[in-house]
Amino acid sequence: MYNILLTDDEQIVIDSLSFIINKNFDEEVKIHTALSGTKALEIVTRENIDIIFMDINMPGLMGLETVSCITKIKPESIIIILSAFDKFQYAQEAMNLGVYKYITKPVNRNVVVQTIQSAMDTVDARRGMKKEDKELQKKLDMFSPMIENDFIYACAFNYENDLDLITYLDYFNIPDSAWCFCCFEFPNINSENKNLMYKKIRDLINEKQKCLTSSFIMNRIIVYYPVFSAEVNYIELIKDLYKNLCFNISNGIKAGISSIYNDKTKLTESYSEALSNLNRTPSQGGLTFSGSTANSNTFPEQNEQDFKKQILLKLKQGDTTGVKSYLDLFSSQIGTSMSDINVTKNKFFEIIVSAYNVTTEILLDYTNQDYLNAFATLSAENSLNSIRTFTQKLLLEFASEINHIKTQEENPIISKVAAFIQENLDKDISLEQMADYVNISSFYLSKLFKEEKGISFITYLTDCRLEKAQELLQQKDYSIKEITAMTGYNDQNYFSRLFKNKFGISPSEYRNSL
Image (cartoon, rainbow, N blue to C red; front, side, top):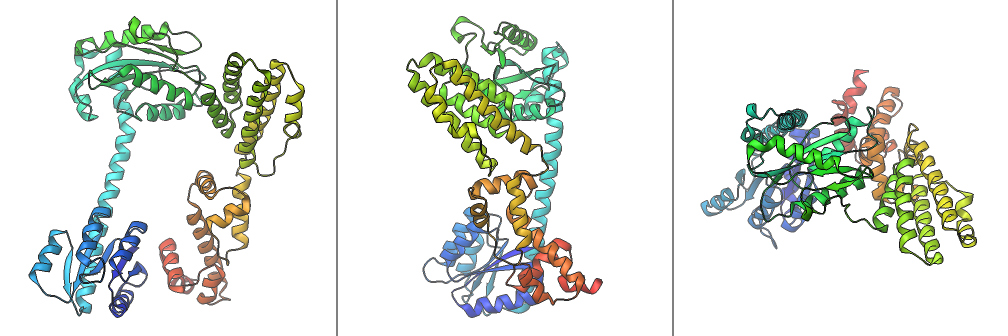
């Protein structure tokens, strides 16, 4: 499918081009139209346009001005200039802007057809290159972790005599600079979650800058951390990394960090220093740097709001263990920083309400009697331990219910929306309408659909309609025009294009093949 934009201030020109294109390319293209340069820019920013026909002389934003803007926004778009002026000056300026071809009016049908066919070939070639690039990147993504792991093992286990450090760094596009080693030890790692956790940890480590990361050695990961400048406070950067890992992976991570090294013969020594610092880190977790000025055995500062965010995050995941761990940290923070019992009650009540709201976003019809009586229960309590116990009991119930739903085949919200779609394929259905139907935001519904179905809402809706159309075509009781309406489409040509794009043949060809 090719998206073609026709831009001209004369409707008759647009109609003529549309007729030529539809007659010769039929269902291969989707045509968009604009009567001004401003409208053309609006369409280009919104749609994935492949080929653009642009009139050179229009009121308002002129054709060449529009072309200049488009080449900055969508440089891969193929632009064909239409002009009543066969002037070298215009043609030269157009070519300088990267225009694909310059056609004079009145347009010649054969020239238009040949130009479009040639432009389509160019689009296909570019798509092929993108596909090859993606396949190459996929292969690199597969092999890079193995190469990184080989590098780390060579550094850590005294193979550096055979190690060409520069070659490794060049491969990963890392400058030959100073470095330190980081040894991270993660709690709760087992054979079932190790592969998934490794990918997530590696992505987090490389979020701010490229590092080289080993695979798990038992429950430890080793990181070669480049230090690109003496002016960079690498201690603060690694503290930020540690905090990010704790928030997204698990509380209680231990980490040991070496000094900065420049001498490539000291790779193993650097790793040993990081490992030694790891072994000096308290069992409850934390960071240990070399030297007294590096704040050894310190934790990144975490406050009440940080713990609250983590409780709600773990709750959404249905992670009862994570909820309990962060609630304990939240409770100790509240217990030590608040002397007024009424203020403490309010803090616990706030997190109960927030947790319940998260739960009912996922479980639409969920109710909990203890929650309904929560305010009265907390008001009557004056024991901090009892308040903590009551809050923990409620939140673990919420997390358990969410976990139960997540282990089922499909989220009930998605089931409800899917059932509505199947029963109303002939009606106009939008994401916003469905979000109102299940009483959640359209953003959340879109995200949930992608997670549950693996495809977007609009793709799912289109697939349901086209599969229904396929069933109706087999019955031969309805015309294609009737089937178009019965599956929610107003335009038979548009319906036919979608059908052919999915099944490879047009509706009429499909029916004739039965």
